[in-house]
Image (cartoon, rainbow, N blue to C red; front, side, top):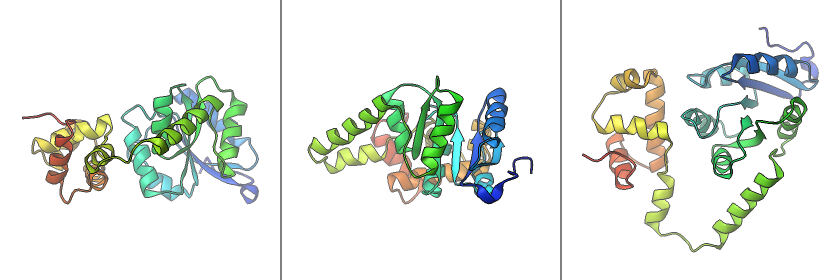
Length: 231
């Protein structure tokens, strides 16, 4: 309720803000609410169990300071998988090509560095809102080089392609190690301080990612890549 714009009729972008730091969260909320053409549809401090809130808010963009290098990248990836049209803008990011490329794979359309000004953040939101991409020029070149490099390499063997698709995040590996130990969803939820619903969604997503018919097949496929603990 607090986040409804008084000029909704002219709104171009409905934005959902996720920021772990309270000061940053409140500062950005005040900044963005003053911007014509931007409506803040919701604000939270954690990515945990927020997918339903994002969908319910009717937003078309998520602005967040959660890094693709953290365990929260699982939530970002799940958001992109379930809502392919959702535009994601990351702020406060490192000037790191590897993290940047991971962000792109997670569906990010905007990547703003930690030393960016308030004006640059707003500009990135507007660019992505118009259907454009927003990233530092040097990292855009990294993406171009990455694509060109992939186009010039030999076609991967079926095994190498399989290994690429089974590249998991730290949190996914942590969760699947517990599945491999035979723990139930309830036990996994207690171990990782997650809800059973979230655990179920994570496992389902991993199964789709590795093209497994069951959680046990997923464990076998992932273990074959060396990403799970051996017994």
